[in-house]
Length: 268
Ligand code: MG
Image 1: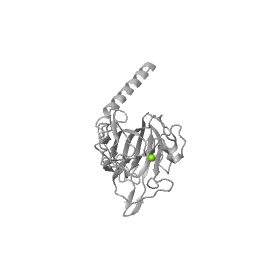
Image 2: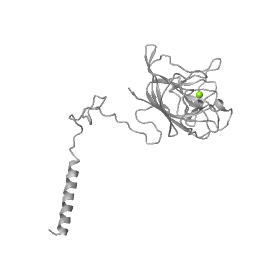
Image 3: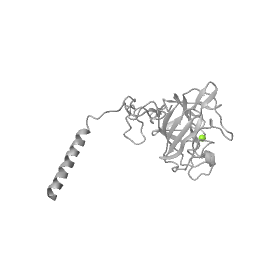
Image 4: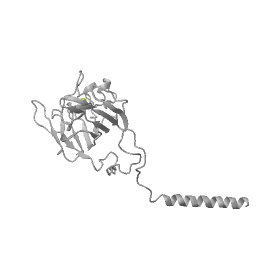
C-alpha cells in the first residue's frame, strides 16, 4: 500500500467514526441508576430519578422580572404597598411618577402587602441630584428585608461616612466589599439573595444569610446577619414569622425606587 492510499484510508476511517459519533448523539440515556451516590446527598451521579428544575422564562430586558417573580413595583401603581405613617403626621402615600416611586418625607416606610421569607430581590434606586446633608443624611433610605434587616441605601458618592453605613452595607454590621455607587440622579441596582432566619419557638435556630450584588459588583457574599438593624448598638434577633413584609425606609429624604421584584426561593 502506497502512502497515498494509506492517507485516503485514514480519512475514510475518520469520516466513519464521525458518522458513528453523530448517530450516537441521539437515543442517549437521560440519566443513570448504576452510578455512585453523591456524598451528603440522596442522589446518584446523573440520577435519572432526580427532580428536574422548574422552567422559568427570563425577562427579555436586562434586570426585568422573570416569569416566576412577584412584581412589587412596575411604576404604574402602588397597589402592592402600604405606608407605615409616622407618629403625629398625616397619613400619606409615597409619590408615584415617571415609572418610579419616591419617598415622601414623613409618610413612613413603604411596606409590601405580601410577605416573603427566602427570596431573590431586585430593586433599583436613585439619590436626589440636589445634595442636602452629608454622611448619614445624604439620601439615606434602606431595603428593610422582613421589615427589619437593612441593606443600606445612601448616596455614597464622595460622601464620607462610617463604612458599615455606606450603600450596600448590612447596616451597622458589614461594609460593602467595594463602593460601586453611581452619581446622584443615576439608577443603582441591588440584586439581593436572602436566606431568612429560622426560629424554634422564641430561640434562634439559624441566623439569616445575605448576598448583595450592587451595580453588577458583589459587595456581600453570604454574610451571617447578626440581628435586626440597629443604630449605635448591636442588633439582635427576636423571633418572628417565617415570612414578613419587605419595607423601604423613609429617612426623610426623597430617594426614588423603581423596577422592584422578588422571587420566593427556598434555600433549605
Ligand atoms: Mg438607612
